[in-house]
Image 1 (cartoon, rainbow, N blue to C red):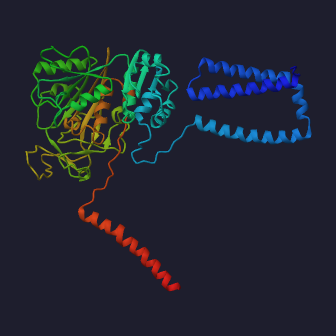
Image 2 (cartoon, rainbow, N blue to C red):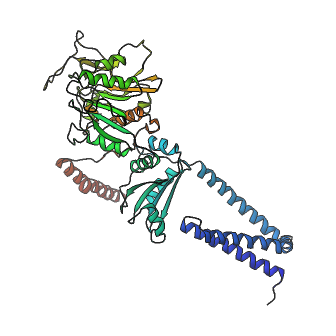
Image 3 (cartoon, rainbow, N blue to C red):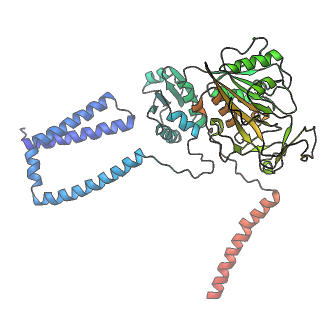
Length: 512
């Protein structure tokens, strides 16, 4: 059979369009542009182009007819509408905007995630290995990928691509793996639910950091222990720091003859016994260079660290802070647990506006001489105006009152942060008049955890990690008493239906 030019142009045009559609559908299903799909799309485009060249005069003749011109006008209007819709969708895609109406902004990524992902300097790939897709994870990943072009997300069937699963170390359906370079982090294994924003962000932080910094906790003076899972322990602190890709360890200044060289930050967590003079001198010398130290000093203790406080223009009060504002009762705390809603101008607390931290049994820690300019100190935490100090608090003591002879009135400072530059770099110190706020029972309440981790981030000079961590949903369940439950049952099953039935009968009676 012999084809003329017009028939050949039609055949090639039809084949080209079919190939373009087939290539696009294959790409949409597979989620990536493989070699075969590329070949089909390129071949389809060539067929369409050849069809236009071969049948050009027939196309011109077709559009010169009156009926074709009317059809062309309709086609142009249709294409114009499609083009407008396409432009609107393109603008919406490039300027992505969502509205989260939940109180805790549960469906909005936290500031920490935005800082970590938005500031990525390395390519990061998140891969989920499974046959089916996970819509919840897909939605969350779209929010992540909108933050940075360096972050990519893929769904891969490990049965179709076992070599990719082997490359990433996936062993089970449902594995989600975060990768950057040679670093790998498994988020979950065979679990459809339970993966959180915090898990994802921490994994990204881990794989993008070349080396993990070490946070050293001083021991030997009754400090909080990293291995203690009780009410006075720092077991949760240990887990939280490791989750942010920090190493943790305990050091003894005497046996190690100073601060270990691998310590990026040194923490003195609420000592109850005195430091030896040589230990204090070791910490002071460490801070004279480029040392980074966090000291929690509880009330009614004297760890003999005065030389450090004096050198850093820090006044540690020999007192106990009482909060008489009554605000603490809203979250179940008493007057001996001061609540802080006012924060200083520091990277540690820059995002704390409108938030709260609380400190079970605290002492004042303030700038000793406000006129001194070196080192540069900032008061981080301020109590309310209705707070005051007392010299001490006896166990079981219920009533306390302000005595102007022995106490100070609020606002009172509970913590300071400062830095001092030297030839080798910069030393940093943070002192807070309480250690219990970071203990296991209180670390995850209000913004206590954010205060602790932000302080470590600032001391370790990891300012990009300073932010508010991902939030959890508030428990809004209503618990009814037996009487309230019975009343609600009567109201629901008897009273309301009775009112409706009576109203209907009454209306019927009046209208009959």
